[in-house]
Image (cartoon, rainbow, N blue to C red):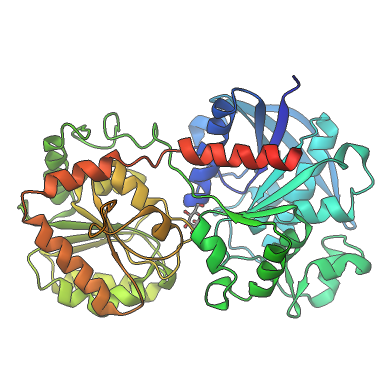
Length: 480
Ligand code: GLC
């Protein structure tokens, strides 16, 4: 039987370059799809070639070809690099003008950069004659792929059967740009007759265009797929999502995490390896972490957070009750960067309570692992959370999650008051509810049963096993 080909298109991927959860998913799901499908499917991943690619990985790339891609009246260079890594084929789109920059995103011409990327991916597919059965695009940076397939390539026989899936990892980032100066035509090269696909509320909205032109719109948890029909979560896209839902094309599949990459038995970033039969060793990691971040080495509950310091991660709620929480006998560590307001707020708290809380303003993957491994509790009070991976990673390292009931947190963590409980939860936006949840956990910490809770949490399966199968069922269904 001929293998079916899936093309993943994304703007980041571990271990090449990543800024967060999206990169982790793109770095871990394809290889699981290949192994779970018994090689019935092959998966290639298309990425931009950023200058920030890790040195190790850069040496693996092979140049294959170069040609010119048209973007409206512009003719842009496109180099193609390739490598195979853990059974997955990766293609990199090279153009230094667009991608030789310090950061992945955040530039005035992001719309143009990622429209170029999207068009180049389609052109590379054509040039190499590697036509996929399914093209699976992730987040707005790749949203122009299904749009161009509709507007520029609809006539091509090789694309007639192609199914288009668009996955929303976070609806907050839609790729919204001003429509001034005839942007859609002049930069994207999209005809006036088709520009309605991208227009929304007087702006140009790439995610909207992707939703309209895809066969399936998925998101990263079933609860979030429901929530984004609601204005409170959809950042203005609720009507588009509702319409797509009525067409039966919206669904949610919970992410998994890479169980090889996150493994407390082998993790080189932590000083003492452990598993659920050997949680005594976890304590050594706690002592090491306390020393590393400058907290006293003592036996009080240590609460960790690894997060972007932004409102939707629940820092508004936390900032209103954190000081009360710090009155208890406990320690806290927060790792992340983000809004200046929150950075200052939690630094100020550290100055006021230096032996209780440490705020480390950095993106440090090694320290993140030591926090996952060394803490007792992990806090995620997110106001919204499409999926969230940290609660799963913390669980894998025996650090008990405390979460707000929303999106993927709701689908992955149940309160210990239920028989299937694997963490602590609170509902609503009241700081008091968050505080009470933390106090419940602190009380339980004193009980003999605590080690059993750690074991229970570590034994929950958050690997890709289940979800990779769900994706494969979806692929098979839409190809029928
Ligand atoms: C985004 C979401 C996060 C999700 C990740 C991977 O970063 O905010 O909730 O886990 O994408 O899908």
